[in-house]
Image (tube, rainbow, N blue to C red; front, side, top):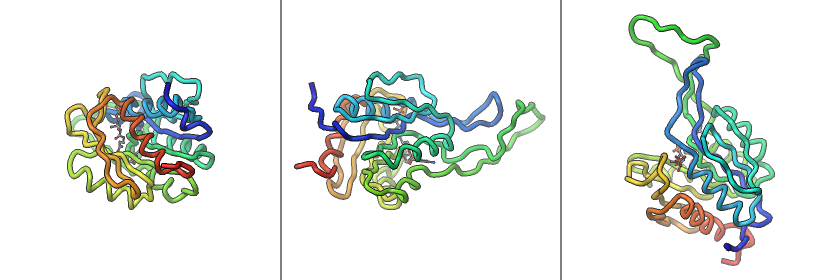
Length: 223
Ligand code: PMT
């Protein structure tokens, strides 16, 4: 069995998509299944961490007694849940695919079909990761980025702009990487370690590789 090298650490992880409601029967969402975030939660729990997993609507089950799961639906609910656990966390990993926009008007009645086209006005959701970068005290903060082009350049920019300690970048256009797959391909970037390629592997193996890299940067590690 693996070393309990995360024992005593409180780890906060977000996973899955969010759902932004249009009316009682319709919503906007994305292709995230939560697999990457659940793999991270399970890997950290197996290594002894006490894990809070904030999950959007997914069909997965978190199988470890060290995992406390908090289910949310919208980006706003995820914002509230993450912030209510942030202060007491040592490590925060944001692998959720949070909606950047939501319908400006949430209809309480099912919208009726009308002749012609329909336009739905969208407004920005709050950027959870950015707000964590601003609120950060001693937490080690890790973001994810899903890009289809210029993945590394966008990732480096997010690392700086959002005051992150590390970022995991997936180019979701590569086969076997990103949304829905059981495997992933990514690049881990941190100021201290630079760029580390994470080649094609199961999301669970990648989760352990990501934790290995993070471990090298946590205070108290002998390296
Ligand atoms: O769930 P799976 O099917 O296993 O797929 C895994 C994944 C592809 C979803 C995952 O590996 C991943 O890349 N997650 C981040 C996806 C994403 O939304 O990337 P982004 O570049 O749009 O966002 C960048 C970062 O900002 C992310 O850490 C995101 O959680 C965060 N964010 C974004 C918008 C917002 N309003 N608040 C946020 O905190």
